[in-house]
Length: 402
Image (cartoon, rainbow, N blue to C red):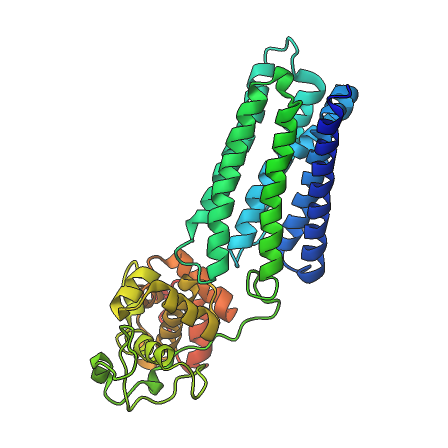
């Protein structure tokens, strides 16, 4: 017993430090971003992880009757679902909780609670099935969380958040797989001794990195602003009188960026700013507002950066920090929606179906277009067209979609 005392004290110290970090993380999210879904889900996840840290203590598992452990185990298993939801909310600025998220958590909690209280290690014929489902929950939802973190990585314009995506995807999958395997290989699925301490030590490391990252990024744009961002579009009327001159090399440091002596100042760029960034802004203005590259199918940060002959990080930084966009798809869709709004307000195009206008602007299908249009304007395309045309204009009802 004496030999084991330092080991027990280490385990207790690690668990205490982890709980303290989790509480700090919950307080920060609740204090700074109470209105955001990511913060609300994050607070719920930190509470669940505190429960998991306590209930996975070897002394707790050995001394507390299985029936009383059931609620703790249920919450611990449900953390896998909360981690999936939190990952979606953190990396998708347009995320909104849906009933399916609550249903998935409730099912995970109910199944694991029933297994712990009644079915585990019983002679019931359904026990192997329910236990197999419970063991699959962390695997399935860690894979879903990794997918959510990696899904729009290339379109994410927030550099620090892009790095955090990689960490969450890799560490989440690795931790889940490693310690699920250890539990499956342990008697009655309970970790003890060095395995339990290693479990809490690795979790402490992961949470510590997350807390450090969120503390460091709290003053940046890890989370979206509570107030709507005033996006600055690069407008067509500010392009140079001779757009072709953008292809001429500049005597200044070009970094692959075209320039024009006759260019008017671009919206969102301060006078006397970085000349390299200003030339990039002018080139971006040229391809977006004049050449209308936003109509191209499969347009990405990589393809646009290649078109402009600049590194991707420079283009992401310009669009994020100067134009106010956190996601490349939102930036491109802003131009597409502007084009559709202009067409809908054009009397000469009043007979053109909404679907045709959406496809011409670069949208691939009517569903995403309708959702984006309604989110941007508060109206359906048909309602917008009717308001823009005025009461005297007559629309052909058979040609309207949306």
